Length: 274
Image (cartoon, rainbow, N blue to C red; front, side, top):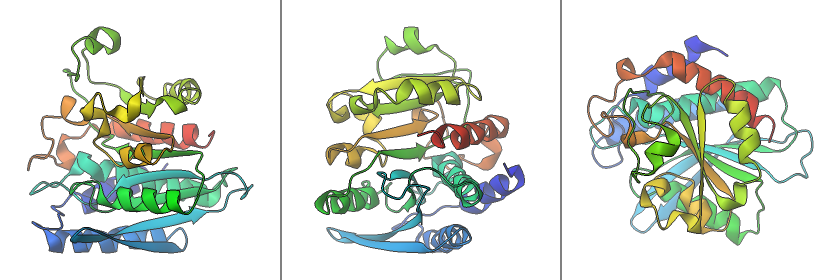
């Protein structure tokens, strides 16, 4: 794992980058994302329009050792919140995505891998809505979709959407959460065990597409739930832990880089086993 490159990616990506409030920042990040992914292979530009909004997802595909197997999609959004550098949200997820690309360029996965840098997550999950709908309409099967959503913040304090969850998961924000629909239940123990060798890892199976707990739908996995796919969010729990969420203070300096590097190591090993 190249920690120097991870830090460089975090630094380059952590700039205000919103389609309405910081379009120049978003344009510069688009160029950076496309260049970084293109260094590992041919990148598909998936342009979309949702209502009056438009954007572009960048997709890098690895064929895998057995191209007939259903693909694994791993995504992270590259747009940012309004007037925030978005270091944790979501430069961290995107930097991890690039690290996975580097790994699978050298170490072929058994199944096809599609790495997706999603656009317009902060503006209504538009990029993932467009892609998930098009895949469903095309009859494309998937093994699993994973959204990497904020991976680099730890805290002595951890909140939850339900008070009872504190008794189950603890009051310290030092873990990574795997938030998945119930169709993923059989995959969760293996993933959790593998990730747990690197960082404390908690699992949360979610019924009914997360409709009864809105907080668990706030990333690019939920449109895939809505289209009937198995999908999972891997996260440091976002605003339930990070006080800099969507604030100008969400900078690289606030991140726990040692934790983040361990998360990326865990992702490389764990996702290679799916």
